[in-house]
Length: 66
Image (cartoon, rainbow, N blue to C red; front, side, top):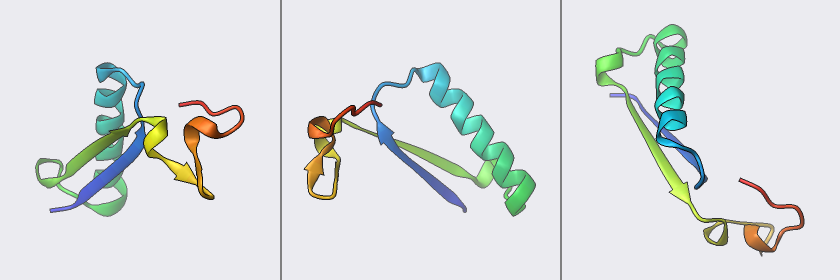
């Protein structure tokens, strides 16, 4: 049961996530011999204020973007 977790800032549409899940599944089937019916893709969306790098919240970073 392979599991792929994608963590990213909120802002992608359902259609973008659908395409991302398909692309990840296809890559795992091709490169990791995963069975698509057993593969889990988990997309975790975060607000920029819930993410920090170097002790600085993303919302406080100069030029931050999704």
